[in-house]
Length: 559
Ligand code: FES
Image 1 (tube, rainbow, N blue to C red):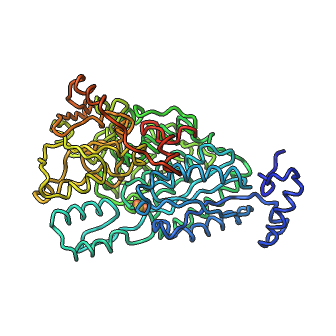
Image 2 (cartoon, protein in one colour):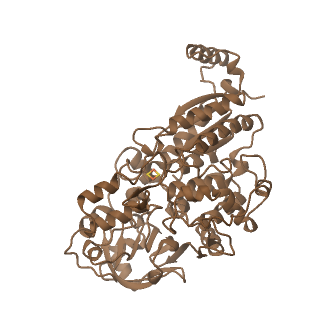
Image 3 (cartoon, rainbow, N blue to C red):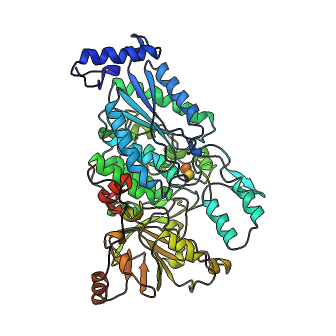
């Protein structure tokens, strides 16, 4: 029998007895006795950081997970990993998702533990942890810090971060004074927890639950609630059971699991970032998932959940209405009921005890009474994105889904920031704003794709325009925004050759996005094109040299 518990993964001194003796000696210094050390060891990844206010309540959650582990007869060992605070990492937390994934994978593999609990929340943490879990040889269970509660400003309900963008757009347009925007700033993120709309954090928490990597009901309890803490306790308890009767992530992360998750993503009107993240997790899990799967499932699944930015509500409303379990019940006919997650029970067994969306609420709809038509997320192809691009149609303007207009090109997010703020910029609302050099290789794929409306047009009341890029956008954003154009411009993708005034045609119903320039002219432009300079050292160089395209999940090729 292979080594268990604290005897796993001994340091290599060419003398296993000495390695264990030495480990025991250092554990004795930390107060552990040999009886305790015979128990199943549960590693708990703690992503507390002063640079990640969304995880402010994580220390309390860690204590509850530890309590669950102890109550079930295990012994908890807490270990830190990087904590990716979305608003604190330059140029984007996405650049560090793969770094956290590698770090977590290696710490699970190298340290002695029989099962791991991974605690995340803020946008890139959960995908990174799922990527690490997918290649783990021990049981792994995830839990999250949970969403913030809403606040209000002058009687209007307020939450991060769809309202952040809405109020900032009003401020840019001159609707709000400096004092008023300062007031709003103090009320947008009013408690601990993750953004409380259906942004990336909420979406990936729901994906984790739908994949079966989290105990049911874990995606939605608000961060400050007792229910959140009790879920942490139950997670710790379950981790000990998993250590004794291993169900491995590779048993859970199956084709059926991803199919189920894709239905939930579509019904939620979830973040476009989930496309990149799920592709990366599936790739590591050995599941063949493609962009076309997202379009297919989305095309069959109506929008069922009324949350911003696609709808009007917030995560606490979704939670009160029953959260992911009730949504799964609503989608039951389309799901794979035989799938088994960390509970050890099939989804069908789980849903047998779950109620359908209750009549007293209207946040979670039934498929007979949906909030919106199928196709909340669409995958486009065409001469601007031969390998694919995505659009969140549920958060776009319906009148712009078919549009033709002249291009206005920005060479980088910095170029866009500078010129879009210029009231003298020569631009009309018919223009198509093009941003390039913002893909994974060029820039780590920042959330720069939701370009602000040019200042002059914003002041004149224009609220949406067609915007196209190789960047991502925040899951909390809205607008007619085409993202993840692949191949990206930095490797010679078509965005690199667009010039101001070129005609661009978007046709979402036909799933097309095209540059209307003849092929001879494009060939001439390609011949004179030079790729941008890339980072010369460190992680950024390794990343730029080895990152895969967004259409494959933007993991590093050797992973
Ligand atoms: Fe952390 Fe939104 S900034 S979840």
